[in-house]
Image 1 (cartoon, rainbow, N blue to C red):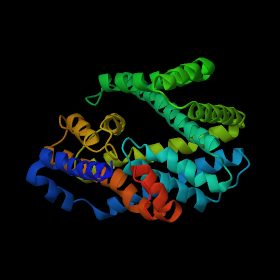
Image 2 (cartoon, rainbow, N blue to C red; image 1 turned 180 degrees about the vertical axis):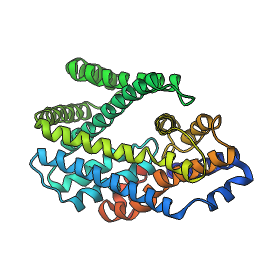
Image 3 (cartoon, one colour; image 1 turned 30 degrees about the horizontal axis):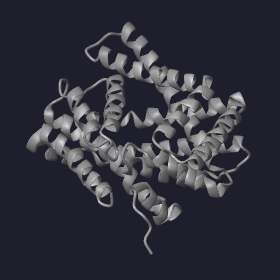
Image 4 (spheres, helix red, strand yellow; image 1 turned 180 degrees about the horizontal axis):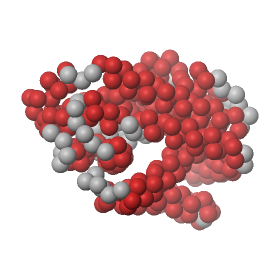
Length: 334
């Protein structure tokens, strides 16, 4: 347990760099050297603007509960949470960090997790709407970039997730009874089951509070969510463009959605391995190997490594060593 996280991190870095280099061979490094520096700076600024959009989302959600956060405070929490998401297997550290950093702001754990869940739900709504719009676009303007099966897979997963969430909220009591039965089967202590049940009830009450937010507030959260994802999901397209390649923006959008989803299945930090392998398969038919390999490295540098580099000092300043040890499964010593 002590060394598992370190092993996963090293394995993730090896796969993240090794797969694109294996795809492009010796021509990848010259392609990277010829990438315009100004475009790299522009993409990093796009990520920073996206973080500010997410900070605005956090301020709106916190404000609905009567808690005021400055833009700087919200931005720091977002950057630390993004770091935790990228640094932990399957992004598991993100909600814990999010809730832990909001607790000193007088937002209790269940309410913070409800805010995080609402934030994720907004993301899912954006992607479902995006799938529908892209489907209509490809129906009206078919081209060589028409990824029919990819669209159906991604849309089915998103719709399935939304249906599962809706059913869980609709049949909340039955879900809780079923979970309680499972916990008893695994011989979880009665006191622990009661504590989890109280937490779940508080979580549901917090969700109901968020549902009472005004429509303009929720629309504002969704609008900021949309701007963030449109900026972030333009990175791969710009990377390919800067390398002299050509691909449809809509196809690059789908490639990133599928690749990051596949990456989470690997349970490696940042989805390493799965994201690179799936994006390689999706880009290889349309791009030169060196261009595809270099584009994947640049894309991951901006949307993965940059999150670690920029977020690490913010996480260290806000959360510190105890929370990091909690995320990585290490016990505090001394």
